[in-house]
Structure formats: C-alpha cells, structure tokens
Length: 330
Image (cartoon, rainbow, N blue to C red; front, side, top):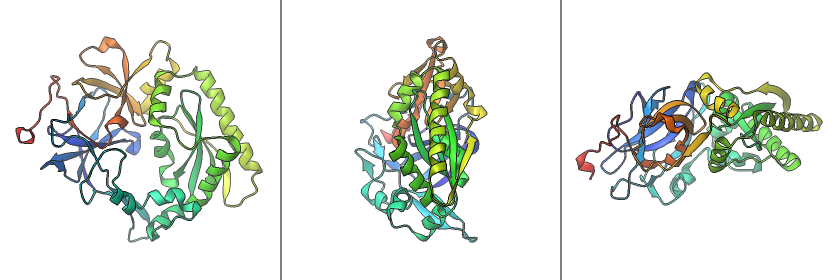
C-alpha cells in the first residue's frame, strides 16, 4: 500500500491498520475510506507526547463499519538483490467476520510461509533471500513474569522487540540465517518450555497488573541465562551465543515508569473504543499507548489497546469530543 505522513487523523472514516514503531517512535497507520470501502492509500500519523487522541469504532448503522481484510505481504528484490516486503491491498476489498486476512490474501501472502520455512514451506526467491540473512534470537519477559522466545531479522533487531510490549528482553543468539534461528527457537521451546506466542489480551492483563520490578528482573535473568546455557551446550553450527540487552526508547519511558511505580501509578485498560473519549497521550509500547482522559485527567492513567482497533472501520474524535463524518457516508 502507498503511504504518506500526516500529523492528524482524517476527518472522515478510516480503517485503523496498526500502531508501528519506525525509528522507535509511535506511528499510527490508517487507511481512509471512500465509496464505502478502504482506498488502499495508507496515512501514517505521528503519535507525539501530549497529542489529543480519540478514536471511535463505526457502528453497524454505517455501511462502512466492520472488519476489513489487511491485504497481503509481497516479497521483492531491488536492483542490488536486496529483499524487502510491502503490503498490497486486498484485491477484492473483502470484509471479514474474524481474523486479519481473507482466504485469498492468506494464499497470496509471501511472509506467512517464512514461519514454516524450517519445516519445508515453499518460499519465493525474494523470501528465500530474506531468510538467508542473519537473524537474532531473543528472550522476552512480560510484566506478569512470563517469558517467551522470539526471532528478529538483522534489520529489525530492535523494532521487532519494540512491537512486543515486553518488560525486559535480551538477545541470546545471532544465527547465520532465518532457518537456523527458527530451529534454535524450537529447541528452546521444547527444552525450556519457553512459549513462542503471547496473546494481546494476556499482555493487557500483564501491563495493568504487573509483578514487582525486582521479581521481573530476576525472572528475566533466569530465563535469558537458562537459554544461553542451553545454547552453549548445543552442538550445532551456524550461530553464536549473544549477550546483548534490549532497552526501551525514550518515547516509551512513561510506560516503563508505570512498571516501576505500579502501586501508585496503575494503568487502567481501555479497549472498547465505543465512546467519544479523548485522551492525552504520554507514551507507549507495542500496540499500547499510555494516556489520561482530557475531560478528566484526575481519573488516572489508561493503557489504550490499539490492537482492538486493528483493521476496523473507525473515525476520529475531534478536540471538542464530537465526531465528524461526511453526510454522504450516512
């Protein structure tokens, strides 16, 4: 999808696509709607500290309401042979009952098979070139003390973890390619019981009810060092044990201060997006933003779960708490 930068959300309905962290700054990707469907043109809205942000899901009285297919990832090589992926809009502009992709886009997607490449999944030339580059293996611990193992391409070593809303994270290996790193990931899952998935709902519960920071530190240190000890004994070629740690970006610091001071700065989870609330953004991590209500800043700090907006038709709340929709859309 083509994209353009902006400082404000469209004043007409749009599909909220994602909250991303390019250059370690939060950016909302939204796709304006026209003629009753997404346009295929993505607008990247910079989410800055003190920004007033409000989003409301379009209700079923709007023809444009609901969940829309995210499209598919197309892999390509540039003139120098470097691989990359870009998102292509759904060819049929399909609406969904559940999930993120329609069957057609799942079939066309060139990134999905990468997760099964070490199990023999067929890849395109560009996807093979991507997976043949070095990959990192990391262990992440969440505010509830649970840990997972994950992988990151060499070009997304930091941003991949930024997107996970972790409490702590450490890189435990650097593999020669993506096939080797996924074998290592499976090793740690089988041997140490480290899961490879942490659901968003579980992350919300973790951030709104975190463990003591010292307990998180101890649990993470044990998980990361346990992974490194196992890998050091693993007699397989193609990787080295790593001892790098991940740290949150400056744009995330308010969110991480909540973890350190959770007893006096608890985060109230917010995920409904059904009312015209307007929030003053402070910080964020992964799919979450920390914010206070503009109308009632004394009500406490909120954890805004933008994952519950993903691929859903929405509209922005104006500074006066109203919503603006073109009359042609009714």
